[in-house]
Amino acid sequence: MKILLADDHFMVREGMKLMLNKLADEIIIEEAENYFEVIDLIRQATDFNLMLVDKTMPGMSMDNGLSEIIKQAGNVPVIMLSASENPVQMKQALELGAKGYIP
Picture 1 (tube, rainbow, N blue to C red):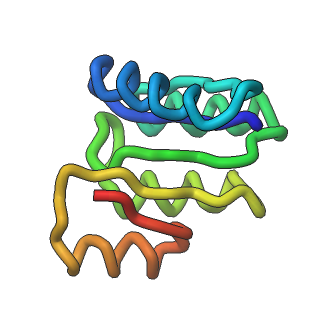
Picture 2 (cartoon, rainbow, N blue to C red):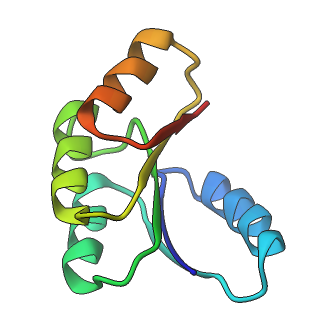
């Protein structure tokens, strides 16, 4: 399984990688720390199975960044990660096309 993991905080990415690698033996994780890097990675590799994307990263607003990622991702599920449990933001992410929201 190939996962794109995007968060602007290195320690969050490291913790997520540790957790994800415990789920299966053969997980490949590509990392990005801003919306532009995510979009570049999607354009370079079309074989992602899942994208875990932080809500707030440099480069774009969540609306613009998530919309562009979902447009570029095609059928690959995009899950929004956030420190916020705000139901309005959760609903907004799902309305923009995210397949899930993990606070």
